[in-house]
Length: 187
Image (tube, rainbow, N blue to C red; front, side, top):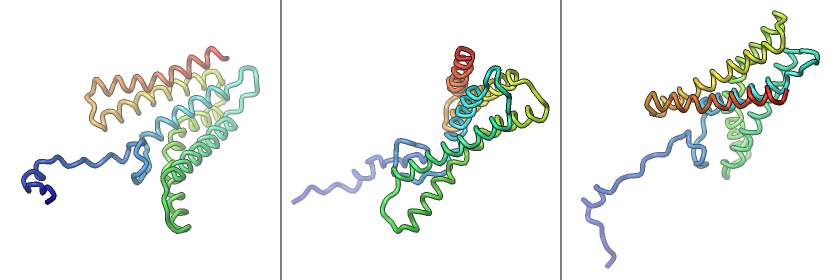
């Protein structure tokens, strides 16, 4: 006769906890707009592009630079959403798969939204006639501060204590510092 578990024994067995919807390693979960991930990714992308588009001695075109940052962020968001869709979707009707694809692409809006501070800065630079070096320096500094804020805020939100959250913010800001140093060395 097969072993039968005593009813009280099953009551003492721990039940598995549900996994977080923000766990990017688990591909079998419904994926919503992850504004925290998109915020960091979009801010890093905007910083790197701002630094790369700042050409010494060339004609300064802040609105063209802003357009390139927006187009690149949109293309990266579309590629990221499409890749998640292809990795995550299962069987279903064609209409269902198209709805899932549309949702996956829509969920990438935070990456594009995170470039808005840089786009606003470049628009103001065009309107006010600011010098390119100053705009790039201010933009990279602003984005580094935003990376710190994203890192600390996300850490606090997921339960880290304030000291650990500030250290995580500093680690995220270090990405911005790497871009600043690389910009100084390359240019």
